[in-house]
Image (tube, rainbow, N blue to C red; front, side, top):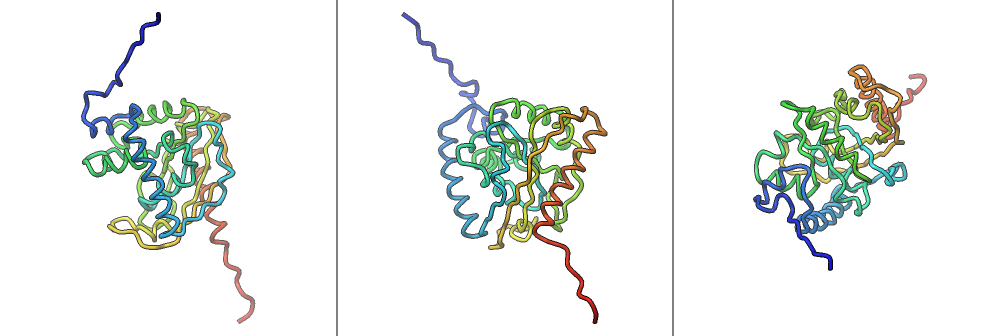
Amino acid sequence: MEVWHYDPVADLDQQLIERLRHFPREPDMLVYGLRGAAALLLRGWLRLYHRLTIIGRENLPLDRSFVMVANHASHLDALCLWSALPLRKLHCTFPAAAKDYFFTNTPRTLAAAILVNALPFERRLNPRQSLSLCRHVLEGSGNILILFPEGMRSRTGEVGEFKGGVGLLLAGTNIPVVPCFLHGTQAAWTKGKWCPRPQRVRVLIGQPRDFAHLPRSKEAARRIGDALREAVLDLSRRLTPPRVKSRGG
């Protein structure tokens, strides 16, 4: 007769807040339940209060692991990209969130880890270790990583320079990366404001691409960052076509 053996999860003796700060996290049915309920509420709020519109969902390669990159001007950005994904992807989607901001106190940690399953990203002291965590996520089957390569929220809404980390992560791999453009989030919840306004928000999702043909180097990382930024800007131009000057006086 086969003997049944029980192995408790590795973080069983830790407090909830410590388990949430750790990554990768062990499965937790309570957290999964709270996240599922929050997802339904947040998606309803985004659609009703911000009239969220998502264009290009068919471009998402949902049969494999991939990366989503976008411009960054608001705390709404991750929620909007997260809401563009099917509910079945809820617990295998990981927005990278600044560890020095979202994981420094209990309320922010609870919001980041429970609501959106955020990956704590160390952007100053040890970014290479954080990139290693990102690679670990993408090695899993069907995982989704959300990155904002600008690193910080824009105060003006302009798309800034894309840092090289995303290029180092993707160079020489066949991992698809999907460029996205977020429109209206900066006006809806401007950096420094406490409360979002009922501004219309749209998400444009572009065609996936990969950079398997490029070596993992600083130059390749720069080229990838520039290419992805240009792809995001191309999406933005679909919403803001160039003005045609009228002839005559």
